[in-house]
Image (cartoon, rainbow, N blue to C red; front, side, top):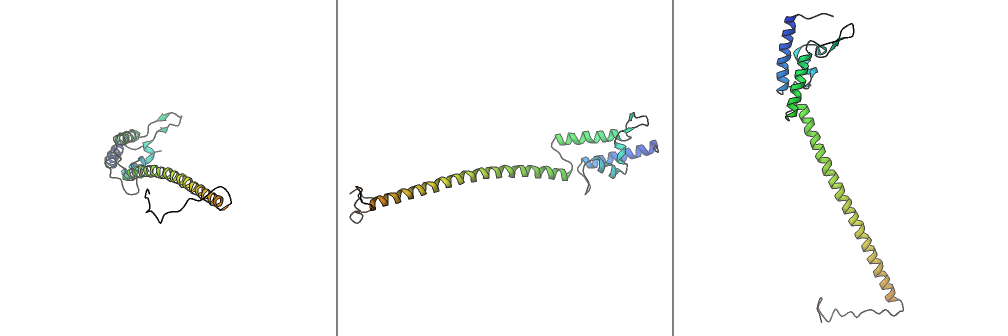
Length: 164
């Protein structure tokens, strides 16, 4: 494993900081995200430099750019807390999630409304069927010999709705 010189490290840190500022400002390259992988790729450094390592004896040691990765993640979290999402793709995903949530609520409300209307229709049809059966029973009772008599139909003598 080769070590990098102090000059190369300073040069890489400068490049990483420049890319970090661009990414956090929302200048995310196409196909990239606002993350460590894109930061490393755009700065031209190995991504492994952003993560901790282990010495041969198993003791941990910081990656050469781990402090920059932590700063990047902290600043990104601060931006998200204030409601700013520098990654246009992530912002689109958040917007679409909110839209899906709204559509699900509307769908649930419509399903509830349809359920209510279906119940109403079933009750109305049941009432109509019961009224029809009662009308048929009364007609049968009128037609059969019994003490039931039909009322006189005097529609011709008085206008509809007349009291006389």
